[in-house]
Length: 336
Image (cartoon, rainbow, N blue to C red):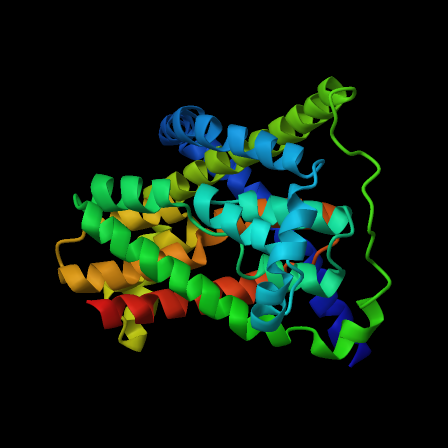
């Protein structure tokens, strides 16, 4: 039995090195397509992600040095505590996460925990439902750009928000058994780095440096996953999985391929779904809503890079996004 455990451990320890070696091999084999994918991902980051998210990152970082977040806590605690079982400061993360999109919500939750405005369990509850796609992406990119309809974008955004709030309500019981350990031990009332005209330059420079580090990390993930999707398409791996493996279980190829692509990266996944001619239009919207709710493994790894520094578990985020994806698809079905 002990020998079997050692073999399993050795196999697990070889998985990541093997995947990295395969990735390097595919970089060499499909260098032409990979170069085009990298350029495409870099252009997407430079033209869309960087100008839209960097100002939000700087502004939210700066607000963390003011009394706006504690003020939200005092005003909205009576709303957030009974519904979501989190402090009122969590309303700031929820609102900004909905308005600005991935991964602003996760960044704000990490800031709240680092500033000791919420404890570890509350941070895990918040991370499960405050990191969402923004209206600019859902209405503009998905609705108008992919489905050629602003009303469809508004429908998907509405179901996205409803699913997010439903998930937050259900996660109010997350970590209930451990809550006593954190109830009073991780809070801090005052903030030593309060923003004023005297330290405005110093605080803003900190906010800019922190925001640039985060936006560069996001850019790296965008380029990396653009290359990974290109590799999987060029090598026909996605096609093989969807046409030979998943169809064996009775799952249609078009459906499985769209879900697989969306699970890897949300933008490419929804674009693939929108261009499918073999699916009914209403079914396309339901699948697109599901993919939007989950957000893709690209966003998952972006969130992991943020939460790991703040020592927040990624498990509630993963389970929360799966739950949100199911609710988003269900609400879309009801509204249609």
